[in-house]
Image: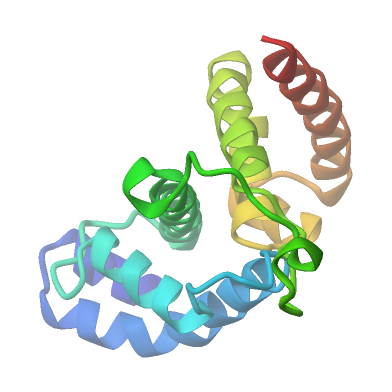
Length: 187
């Protein structure tokens, strides 16, 4: 795979076509892991998330990726942005985002209620943006773990840090983000 990244760096267009089959299964696994934690009413599927992320990364015109970590970091960021855009779209006024929700019991229908909340995802996004200015490496770890679904060990490998450092960074990031989300809720 390193050879493909070198070929991409030198502008070899056929390398992008060879890269997708090699990374597709891993991207699909990461997307499926992330989507498993989404609300039951989520309309975005893991395959669609991977395809959209691939297109946002450049499709067949892939930029010059420096290495595997660079590629998967960009893929994680792309997936995060897609999920944020999807949450914003669902909350938009033209999609009923400002309407009051009514429980299934009040309507007389037996409908499953989503457990996740788009406004919570947007709060996490805002907090993460603030955290990025505070500590970009730890923010990247959060993106890889929370949005791309990597384990701490995998995220550490992508970032070039030890698993122990990744665990410490994760504990710090969680505490910082918790406090920031709390602060954002109060404002």
